[in-house]
Length: 367
Image 1 (cartoon, helix red, strand yellow):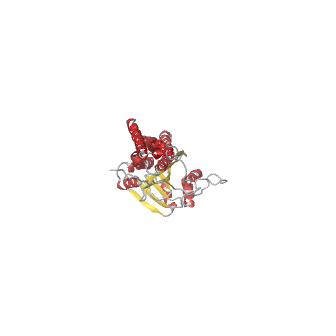
Image 2 (cartoon, one colour):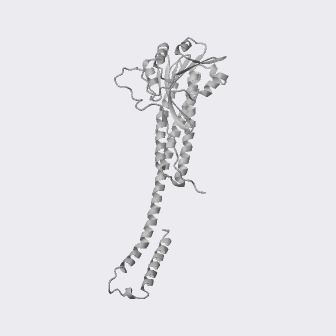
Image 3 (cartoon, one colour):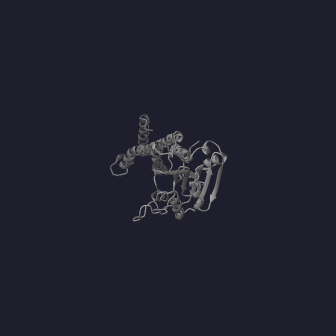
């Protein structure tokens, strides 16, 4: 059963910012709030919980969340989907005393993952990767988090994320999340993002395996473009995942009261997962380089086979062409021209030469 050659369709990673959106406008003062990505509608979700209860609601204005700053008996999670409402962000920043440069970084969705310590809160930027749509395309989205003493504020570019398991654990009271402080909630959010990286890795592992099989069985048209496409995607993944190691390491080392000693082992576990993800990306890059080498070798071997066949045919027909050319000159005193059996003898000589050359090529294993 043969392998069907086909040009596979690879799904590009979607960048959630418009053309030129990543460039900061020149001349603006530091801390200027300029939206740089999609103008998705804003949705504010407030989850307040403690060991005994969990209250979840969607609020229409940010002022409804200001009371969480005074709530010291539980943990509050403010999740903001969509960053189009600049006035809302300014009010939020003023109430929670968030630095204007932090608000600027939240709106500038082309930031690299990082961690900033602002004494009374920690600011974290991560890249969330997930698969969506009928074509199972990979989407990247910036997630920003502000970790305070009793609250976590998360900012997303649009509605939809990988945090549903955390919401379900909060509603059902499963695990220890409702008995822990806000730093454990921040860990859970980071861990959920990192865990979903493995889904992305599995997706690309399948793509690379299919590509490798196609190259080995016989490269289809466009294989080189597909290989280079996947190599570019690995570079993009590394750019968004590589800084995560330093970020989590800093979370472990920061001498801040916002991270309790009991959360440190969980952060160490996330750090191990991040190392695993980075090493997997490096492994995929090496595999793609190997597939590319195999592809070039296969193309070279195929070309050599074609050239060998052409060379054999040329080697056989060169002496035949010489003989036919000699007897095609039609000189008057060529004795063979008037010989009754001359035509058949020449054909026999030509057939003998061809057969002899084929036997010689066969003995030399050229055929």
